[in-house]
Length: 114
Length: 110
Image (cartoon, rainbow over all chains, first blue to last red; front, side, top):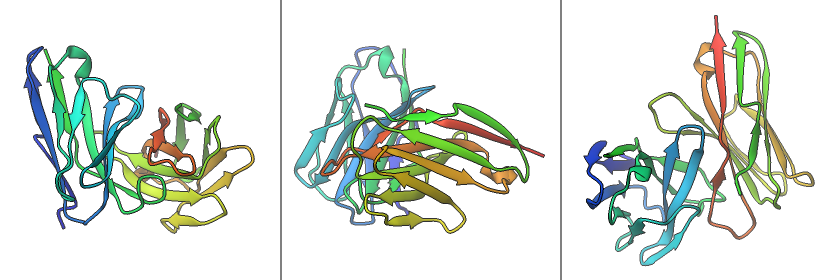
């Protein structure tokens, strides 16, 4: 019962470096999404996908890229890290396309950009 | 546009009741409620859909006023385990985007 698995759990980057946060789910969910969580701001949607090959932007997409080549995986790429991207990132999947079904969250990835 | 939650924080003694409110300025199809404990991922509590359908845990109750675009989460006979930050998430009809509020921090003390 793995559910949603995120790696790495912790990462420290220097400004300008790039990296990929990995997300995999084993529930055969079509819908996957990435959120960032900052103190006092709640969870803000970065990007989402409603199936393999289909992605779209959320509320705060700038500085991030995503792709969805398989149903299971939904990686999030930071192209050129900035201190403003220091945050906790959560990947989530759903059988109900986000609005109509329970979101299952991964454990989170804590990113610090120096 | 983020839904607005109130109160921002509340402290309860065990056994007391609390209500957390969530309000949106746009027409809603669904309202979700999640609880997050410190250092952990959010956990699903309930979803309320336009038209009256509800899915969630038996011990949690909530309401959804479709005309006012408001939802309330009712926590009765609170236990220490209820402590955490509660988030509402809202989505409009046909939208794939679930937008969360800033959260309500609930602390239950003995």
